[in-house]
Image 1 (tube, rainbow, N blue to C red):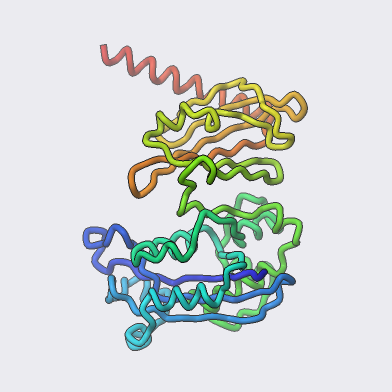
Image 2 (cartoon, rainbow, N blue to C red):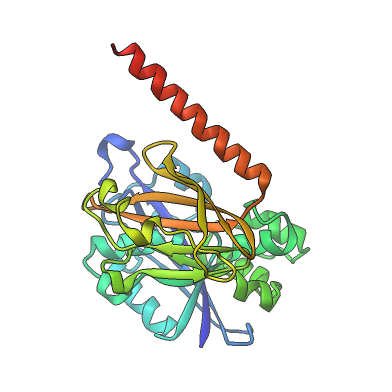
Length: 317
C-alpha cells in the first residue's frame, strides 16, 4: 500500500463566467505527485503538463500564479493520456492525499468530462493534509495555506509554490510529520461520486463525531422522510439517542437536531443537503458530542425561525 500525495494546477475561462463550459469550469493543466510507501518514505515522483483544449488561452489569474509557458502547454500531454499515466503510476492499492478538499473533485470532474470516470471508482477515503495539519498543530478548525504550514514546520523552501510537483512535495513533507494516530483518526471521504444505493451508503465513526452519507433521493422531502436520515445515534456507543429537538431547517440546505444518549449525554446532529449534477439529492449527516450551551443555541435558533415564520404568515393575510 502506498500514499499518493498529488497536486493539480488548472485554468479557467479567460473570458469570464459567460463563456465558461459548465461541465468543466476548471481545466487541469498540470498533475504533480509524490509516492510514499507504507512507512511514508518517498519512493517516486510523477509530473505531467497537460495541453489545454477547452480553455486554450490562460486566464490572467492562472498566468499570475502558475508559471507555465505557451510552448510548454502546447507540447503537453492530452488529459486522457496524462490521467491514464497518473493512475497507472499510482497503482490500484494507493490512498490519495491532498492539501484541502478541491483537488480530488476536480480530478474526477475532468475525468467525467472525457468519459473516463470509470477508471476511478468512488466514493473513497483519502487524507486531507490541510485538515490533519490543523488537528495536530492548531485548533482543528483552521485551514491554512500550504506555505504557512511549510513555514510553521520550518521546512526548507527550495522550489517555488504553485507548481504541481513542488506543491505535492511540500504537502508530502507536511504529511510525513503528522502523527500516525492523528492520521488514522481523521481521514476524509470524497463524495464527488456519491453513494447510489442503500448498500453503498457510508457510515463512519471518528474521534468525537460520526458521519453518514446517504444514497440519492428524488427530492429533499423524500430524504427527510427516510428513517436512516432522521435517525440519531450516539457517535461513541452507537446506541439510539432520544431527540430533544427534532430536525428543523435553517435554510434550504441545512437541518439541525439535538439528542441525548443515556450514557454519553448530548449529541448535536447536522444534515447537509447536496445536489447531484442530475438534480437529485443526497444527505451528509454528522452527529457529534455536544453540551448544554450548544443545545440552548440550537433551541433559540429554532424559536427564532418559528417566530419569523409566524410573522410572515400573519403579514400575508
